Length: 253
Image 1 (cartoon, helix red, strand yellow):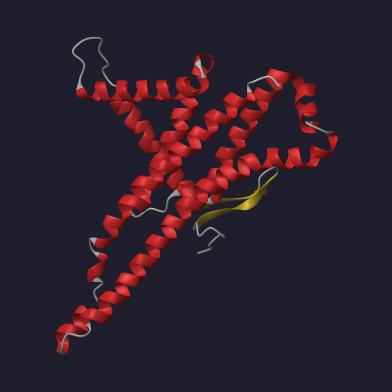
Image 2 (cartoon, rainbow, N blue to C red):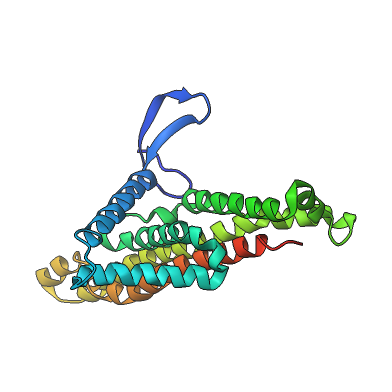
């Protein structure tokens, strides 16, 4: 089975090339991403069934709390005029969180593949550029690359390109590092378990040394940070940067 540079398994490659996309492969990242979308869709359907005006259920209370939190986050950081951005930012946050945490059930997180964050960053970059052109016009947007003096144009262009790259690499680097560290911890504990239990005499030591007993429990404690805290925090940071960049881009100047 083929492996790409990020470690995502390739399950199927189409025998022909698409005119625009070239060779198209269904990778592990793509399959788990579809699963993430199905989980989020199912959760949304579950939370929004049988909504009431009075005597609401606990499920509806949770749904209303999540919607209110999303409203406050976007409007608080971007202003009332960006209310239409609430669904996009909410979807981005939830997708990122679920993608980050799905590794807890043994699946490889889609966000451990740079192509996932790169796609998100490109979408955000297009929205940032749209807001800049909307606020300053095409001419004003292009003229902005010459500020404060024309000689700064190449550096301003690099700075513009660096925005989506830094957003993608920051998120990807933190998630991938967690995956790698967890794998190293599992491997180290397996070796330690084999060495310690191998000290037991006779057949008992020979049998138990082959069972990675230390891999049970200890990694779960560490995953509280590497999976739960880091996963949620990276999703929050990505969405915070998205709202800040888009809101700043809408300012004339």
